[in-house]
Amino acid sequence: MSENPPAGDAAGDAPKKAPEPSGVDLARVALRAAKEQARARGAAAQQKKQARRGGLRSGARADGRDPLALGAAINRLITERGWEAPAAVGGVMGRWPEIVGDDLAKHCVPQKYDEDERVLTVQCDSTAWATQLRLLAPQLVARLNEDLGHGTVRLLKVLGPGGPARRYGPLRAPGSKGPGDTYG
Image (cartoon, rainbow, N blue to C red; front, side, top):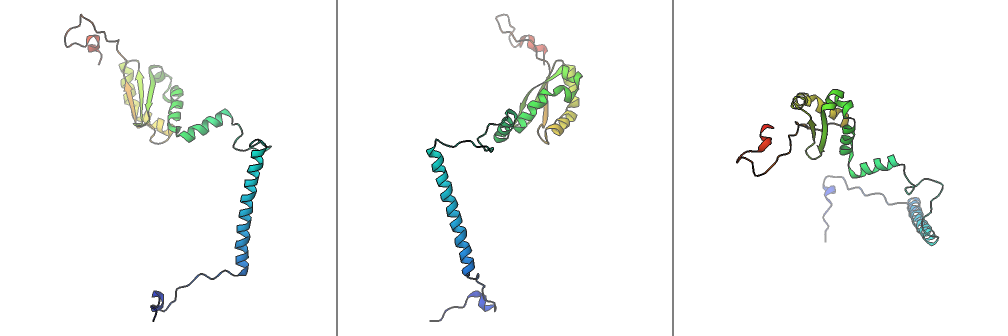
């Protein structure tokens, strides 16, 4: 029976094999394995000892079980839950007068932020201020994104003043919306 030569022999170069580990290398590998096993046995023994004496005890050094300061705990919660953008927008709502100026803040109030659509809804107390805010919307969106991070607010939705409550009753004309007809 003749054996087929390996593909590397046809081109004249034999495939190279990894050198066999020598005695010193074998000893190093065996020592490393023994150390890892000893470490594992030591950790298991330590856990058994702690379980026998009533569970884990706190020591002099800080570990993951120590209490956190309130601010650090809240920041950790915000990061873990992915609430950075809503928390940042909430901060903007608190700092609204600083961002838009006192005159505009007296007449226009942020109402809500839609995280999915990235739309900030602002209500104004008159149609004149609503128009003014609509004209300033591009600069305001740029300012908000500069403060919050690029793309946090895509659109500023400006609402005008709300009209009086609509009344429904027996003296209503058919097809009429009542006093709501004059508010658009």
